[in-house]
Image (cartoon, rainbow, N blue to C red; front, side, top):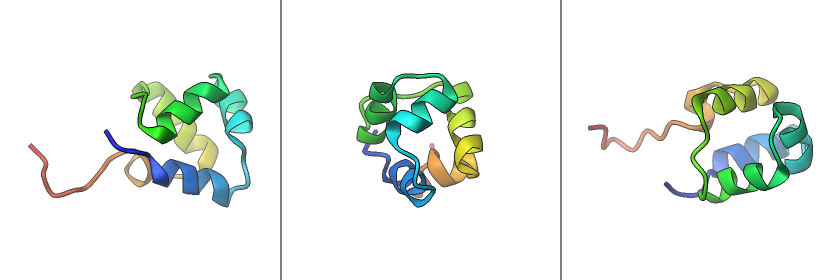
Length: 70
């Protein structure tokens, strides 16, 4: 799992800090930071909450399309 640059850019595009996003979805800022840095794999429920907050789809933020699907 690599860095989630799409999450970081979507958050930045809406001018939402890690802390603001964390408070909105009910986690700590450290959790958002860990997701962005690729150190934490969020639950589907958390992924959905983040996507709703950022007005993005799961595909746009979390699901890599690298052509190597198993």
